[in-house]
Image (cartoon, rainbow over all chains, first blue to last red; front, top):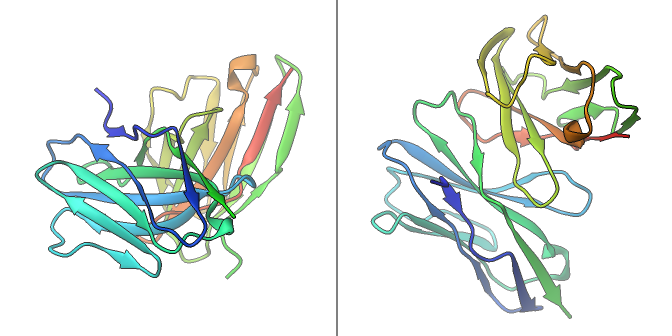
Amino acid sequence: AQKITQTQPGMFVQEKEAVTLDCTYDTSDPSYGLFWYKQPSSGEMIFLIYQGSYDQQNATEGRYSLNFQKARKSANLVISASQLGDSAMYFCAMREGGSNYKLTFGKGTLLTVNP
Amino acid sequence: DTGVSQDPRHKITKRGQNVTFRCDPISEHNRLYWYRQTLGQGPEFLTYFQNEAQLEKSRLLSDRFSAERPKGSFSTLEIQRTEQGDSAMYLCASSLGGDEQFFGPGTRLTVL
């Protein structure tokens, strides 16, 4: 079974609107971390936001917030006030507690921001 | 802090040749990771170093692949007898302990 599932191959959003990118995960480890990375066409992976499994509050970083629903095993990324520069691939990733901290990535969602 | 750097950025080689990639992590980071990313997929873990010790290797890392981090600083990833299926982006990342991983720009390998 896939450990990270991103069901949206592509998403479109109008500039200045908010958008939600979906991510569900599968683990039996009680200790894990969830990450979102952005990959522009240049190829570099840019860290956006992190949520730990024991964190009580949803993580926020500027225009990025993570909607963490532990019981549903979902960790959706919300981008508010989209900008043209947000157009990129977005990857959800998980780090399991006993995994030597390696990341398991989903297949990604290609976000296109329209002017 | 110049971030994680990788060299070369692009490599084109013929099938059967050997190639070597270099990764320079952020200077104080003790953990270093190699990932491989093929078109349309997310990165897949290959191997991990803590300081100079290689602590885990994925089953994706066949015996044609070898990685080193001799002094706990930079790392090299060598692919011997390259195959067309090795064509991919090879990404290096580093972290300080269990914190977020910072990625380099990647080396794009094309095997003809």
